[in-house]
Amino acid sequence: MYCIGDKVVCPLHGAGIIENIITRSTSTVDTEFFVVRLLSIGLKITIPTSSMENSGIRYIITKKNAKNLVDTFHSLNFEYDSNWTKRYRDNMERLKTGDILEVAKVYKSLAERNKIKGLSAGERKMYQLAKQILFSELMLSLDCEKCDIEDYLSINIELDEEI
Image 1 (spheres, rainbow, N blue to C red):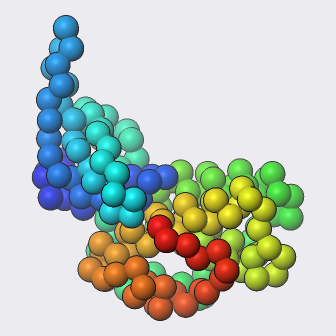
Image 2: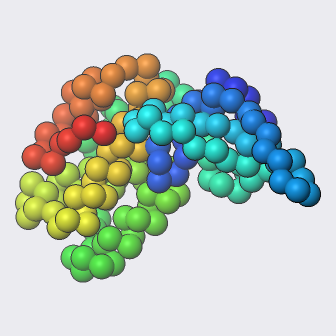
């Protein structure tokens, strides 16, 4: 079970730290919630403790696994569809899984695609989301800053904005 202080990843939001457990009462039932502070955007979200298993939330990857991902990042192979709609849908499904390897593949493929052809507005937004999710988890796992992650992954494209 999760505890205060645990580092977790919320799919489509990124990594954060469980800060508190609160109880909210309605007229019929009391419900406990975890309060998670998301690292990358500073937002706090509440998640019912009863639905943590089904929400896709998981612990962050270990430092060893994070180092392995960074070391193998440039060798990640990813095929993407030439049809924009299918490519967008496939990438969104990958992001929804919450799997850091899938998020890294989406981030890398969009960065490479931008170098070749440029990204549509929707794909630029997805690129920023993938970056936010990937960087926040790596920052927590490796205990480092965003600029260090950028150096490790060394993908510099014009779309880099603050996460």
